[in-house]
Image 1: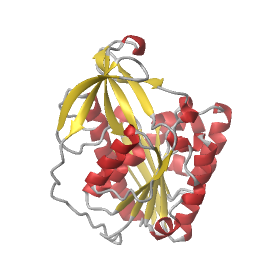
Image 2 (image 1 turned 60 degrees about the vertical axis):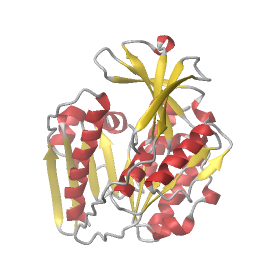
Image 3 (image 1 turned 45 degrees about the horizontal axis):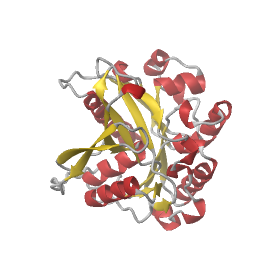
Length: 331
């Protein structure tokens, strides 16, 4: 996943952590695109969103079919799901703040600069004396991406140190919706801050959207992970969950979930809206309110393109319309 701020000029330098070459992209000041605003029935155009979670760099291998130890050069792409959501919403004209712990290093400063250029409210970011996370991603011969580990032990990165005492309480109480994931729950300090943030949002009448993401490599105690994730999901008003997450958390197969997404919603009684994604198999949703129950299935549409990340981006577009249909009914 990557953020697009504008055109890039590329040069090569040596990575301090791996010794391999890193293709750096020097960004040119972006042209601000025309903004399209979407108004959905009771959802106000001026709705405020707060995204809580990680910002990082994905280092994508430039060679295909080569293991990490033999990769000669990598291209870093800024990302992290909550950060991506914050930048995309801002580009759509939705006032969005980003709550995260970002390192006092060059990578952290680059992320901050990029978000400010796009227009994300970064006054809510905590800068900490810990390195900004890097994730190394190998590519198969066919171009598919495979996670290949971090540059450092996971618990040393900045996103593990979000401080609940420094949370922007007023911004959280005043927002309409908080968007967050589950990777931060692996770090005790950040976990406490995420729980506090969600409770602050709900105390102000806002909604909490949780994008479930099970990645065992983030967790020191994988046995405890399931309970911790499920406890946090109880705070959610909207839950987005993938086929892999379903299998881990509920031992449920994606076929069952896609045919009957309300069977997933039954396991999340506190969440009126549940979204299920299953990659190439499509997506489904179940939404419940005083108006009744609304469900649907969204198949994958075929597109052309040779860049692997294109399919992931289009998958997000597909899910966006799923969210759109679901929330129009629920709101």
